[in-house]
Image 1 (tube, rainbow, N blue to C red):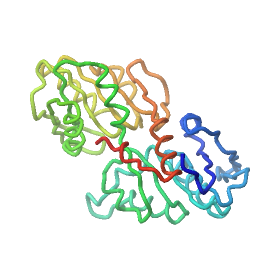
Image 2 (cartoon, rainbow, N blue to C red; image 1 turned 120 degrees about the vertical axis):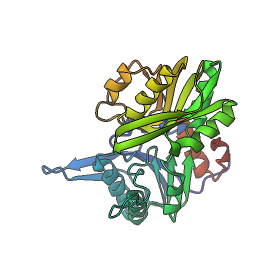
Image 3 (cartoon, rainbow, N blue to C red; image 1 turned 180 degrees about the vertical axis):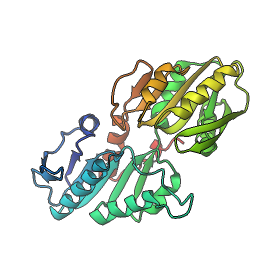
Length: 313
């Protein structure tokens, strides 16, 4: 093993502690000591309780709303910069606010770009994240971005199921590239769902492009929020003659009535990662950990090794 020029230390934000502990264990170390003081009005202040001068530090934390998760990440990066850390890597299993990656109507922000600028301004020198909502978000940064794919976790699981007549499906037109990549890896057919929304999180109409009759279908998406699209797609596919419908979604946001929809849907199971901690357990939700993936990449980044084998699709 080549010698590292810097010591590596791993820290985490509050909500990502469980995942961070698993990543640190796989990395071969323990989490660094951070305490957070909170004022009566809700303002909080993270503090590194050990020296990080001249070190490479990894700060693990997903930035899903509420905005406190992003703010905590920014404050920790700023504190590390002011404590003279040599390299500061923001490890963000889920990059929040990524759905606002362009102006889709007049007078709206591009939040994904704004978050990128805030992370760099705070002092992040590298970003490690997984399954961005849109690949082009990498281009919003002037610092290196390692964009990992959860396919390295999901593909072995799908192969272990040995499903006959497997068909990969995308719940919308925007996810067709991801669906085609999975279908190529699994040598399967592809189906695309075409949907029209009445407004955000409300589906007005859905149609299938492709045949699911007699097929075991796996829907592929980067995130599941209210689960309206997934459960609607599962219902439509079962009505069209599918044998079973599963879904793999990297980031389990699961807001609103998501858990109820999943429990009452025709989905066989929903497979997710632990990039975001589940709010509650569900017999239909299977969690595959991304701890080993991030630990391996962080190790290789620290020792200046290639990480290209982590980019399956």
